Image (tube, rainbow, N blue to C red; front, side, top):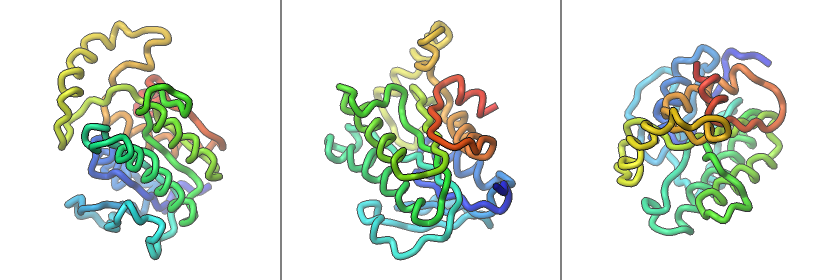
Length: 223
């Protein structure tokens, strides 16, 4: 499989992980074109960048999409920001799965998804259950390679203010070093490392199947 002249499809380019993922894709020599699905422009100008403004509620009606090789999904919100559980489900499940289906129809064979530690379609926790259902449904679409990244708390400069995360971040930074053994997966991690692992994972490892990446895997791929 050639690692040159590839086209990436990215959704979530204005978010905490997505912003850095976009920058890395534009810089990476493996990618000749980066197609970004956006509600509003990223405000970036680059020879490789091709923005497509979309209504995420109507992705299935998108008339055409350039052929793509790899899909990167960094979409996500919070129940508070979404306003309700159904609205959260629409973003973190429906939009995510719709982008994956769109990429598959455009020829993509590999996909990378930012999920969450603890994601499980049978989880009692609503947030983790939705994340798990999105993982499950994407894994059944027939991609050759699926990378699922499951970080714990993301560290970085958000464009939107999340009070709970702002309060928890210093605590997580302080206690992360004490999280050893099976607790390592719950360590807080820089969003830029997750973005680097998204790109690095698909470029460096074409092994078929679904791969779950947690803290140590993410840090390794980001280095």
